[in-house]
Length: 240
Length: 247
Image 1 (cartoon, rainbow over the protein chains, first blue to last red):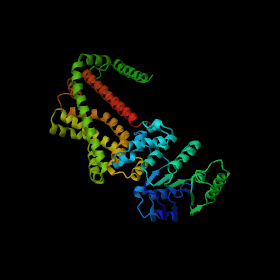
Image 2 (cartoon, rainbow over the protein chains, first blue to last red):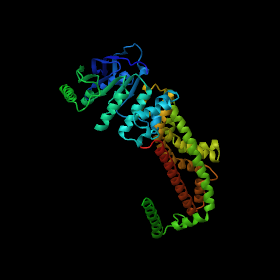
Image 3 (cartoon, rainbow over the protein chains, first blue to last red):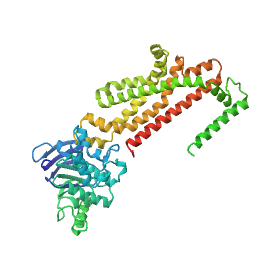
């Protein structure tokens, strides 16, 4: 993996002349987790998709730049709420999908190591329908890691999981994505309070950085400071 | 339990048939009783089998050629904007022509043998297969395409590794539909001009007022069609279940 860049996003997006967001600025710190927190429909996913270079259906005027001056195109990996596992491919085939789509020879040894890292060594030859929702999202995480990109874009990847599985996945993802520039889009104040090195709250009126709770992420859920931060973030979402 | 409904329906249908014959006293060459049809079928089993083999071959080859052509067309349409722009209107126009009306021309061009019947079957199933598979190829879940794009996939590899496998259930529906249509195409071809096949046998029997033989051939054709459909249905579903479990 190449060094993780910081990313500066600024501009406005509109659909049929109606602004999705206006004069918005977002800075992703190099090698850290930036959580973009907001209610549904506020344009968080549009920002993430713009950074990923994916179609959004919105007209965007502005700039997206890495602080090292190089392009972002081939440096991002993307993980969505849906695991996007191909139902006809085994776990290992899903993890090596990127190489096969680029016509490269897949590094099977590395794929098996990553499958083991997410705790699924016994399931490498299974197809996705034989796995639970949490296991499937682990495969998606291994697939993301396999791409070995310095910038990771996470679009609510944990929100469809049950509470315990979600907490486990958050810790696993945080550990395995260490050192990369991560943008986590989420509507869950608890998730932002747990994982963020930097929290940006996005409402209809714009985006604003909010102080992170004390201590380094991932923060323990038993910590009173975590609860206070979660409540404060929740209030900010409601106050919009 | 699974087959009980079918057995019951057969018994009721045969009962009704016999009741109509007994109650109305209709002449045998208008509507022969079921027992006579069964007897005729048994007496002529070698003849019927011979013609069934011809029709079955026509249907089978028609299905094979039609499927290959339909799959190739759908792939071309999905891969190329230019093909979509130019080939699609032609396809739609050819669908506006009643395929039956082409049967005499096909016989003129390809003769009285199997060729014209296979061509009829191909023509009749080509569009359902093309359109079902093409629809599937154009309805790839957008999330897969997002993922492929961020992975730096080429257009062709995306087509081959994601869009085609994701469209196989749609292709399966097209093939099942084709299995229903193909016998119609073959038999129409035989009606227009032929010297063998179940359609030919039916015309022959009808012309000589051997209505019992006509019914025997008709029922054989029905059984052949059902067996064909069940086979294609079973094969496609079993393959999909293995290929993409849980979809």
